[in-house]
Image: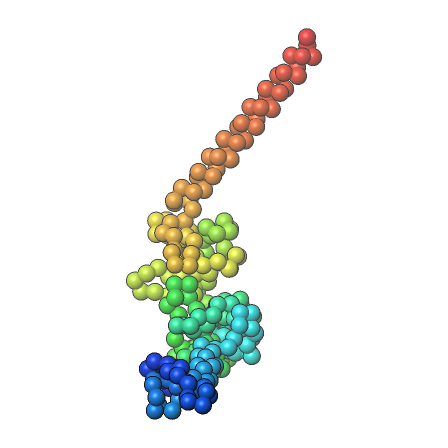
Length: 241
């Protein structure tokens, strides 16, 4: 893609000298260059318009025309939720609520966006996973799933595979709370919380978080029971007296 500022020549100093008849004869780059100061200002305005076009004029919350989604395999509108200048904008599919980016080849579909920034370059059709979008809908109906306790919502739920990795852990999405999850590295049957930029290694049971919470709840319950018993003893002693 061509640089929108490449055609703007701002080299050389600005000469603000005036002509003998008192008229303003400002030039850029010294006398003899023939480019007035006003022409440079006009070029800057033109360059700004080109830059706006280069990065895109969409604003946060803008809704796109219906595009084929590489997550759910249906044609849905998407809402811009994150505007970027050095990478593709991030959208949320109105059909499945998952995050997408525009396909690098076609303009009719979106690719999958992942929290770790390793986005899918092409849509399912352009990368050859499917030859028609009707196949993508069937593919979505047969998503690989795994069952286990979720460290986000604490429910024993189904987790849908969203990113299959060879070295790192596979990435899932909890069907109950729609949050990013990954298999716990210790127990293997529960799911740890996936956070943008950092994925937790262990589920809440294996890292001791749930055990600690239960201990606090038990301690609090025991304290309330003790206070209740003391109150009961006091009332009985006063009535007996």
